Length: 254
Ligand SMILES: Nc1nc2c(ncn2[C@@H]2O[C@H](COP(=O)(O)OP(=O)(O)OP(=O)(O)O)[C@@H](O)[C@H]2O)c(=O)[nH]1
Image 1 (cartoon, rainbow, N blue to C red):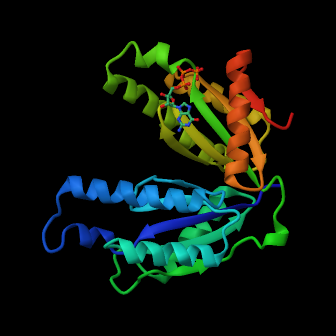
Image 2 (cartoon, rainbow, N blue to C red):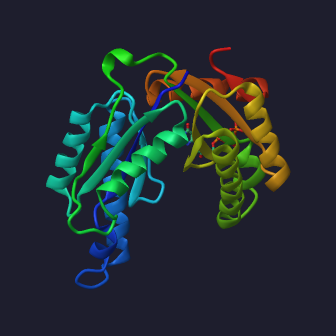
């Protein structure tokens, strides 16, 4: 059974900061947000985790393998180098949506996202080292079948973007409400989904749903592992099997 450890990363009091003493240049905010994301991705990734940029002011990380000291070090390092600070909430659950809900609750209980007195809160619990198992994380790596031939080489870049985003929007809602899973667009035509113990039939059903709803054709490789990296890497290999064999769903462990 999966045990996903999820960390909500929230920039403290960011909204007011972006307009104090007057609105800041948008390009500077975009640069700050993408550099901060890159730094957090490197920190978490070096420890086997994944972080997804989501809204940039709130990011969601899969942190199996990171303990509370790691989280505190991330806060200290960002606080030393950026004009903003981070609050972190951590939780674990077999259901990734529930883990994220609990992690979010920890941060919300510490104060509003726009409370100037809430800074660098770190709340929650992590999986202890001796409780870690090989099937703690299940990750599905989806991509659009032949996105290059269907869209990239055919449509203008914005119309391609609309098609890919439509597929993402439909998949993310379906996986959230029908399969307790968290889906994240990661670039190109790729979507990484953090799942509980789903079966091949569940993935077939999701692909069929997206096809019917928005006419976007997906394939998926699924992997398991102790960390997000292990599971995600196995998922990438399974996706290569889809590409080689022309199949739509491949589970790395079957
Ligand atoms: N984040 C991420 N992006 C990827 C990955 N693989 C491919 N991409 C992106 O997806 C785009 C399209 O590449 P592919 O998915 O290989 O191309 P395709 O035309 O859909 O071909 P098939 O997937 O073989 O059907 C690339 O330009 C990259 O931006 C990956 O593992 N991770």
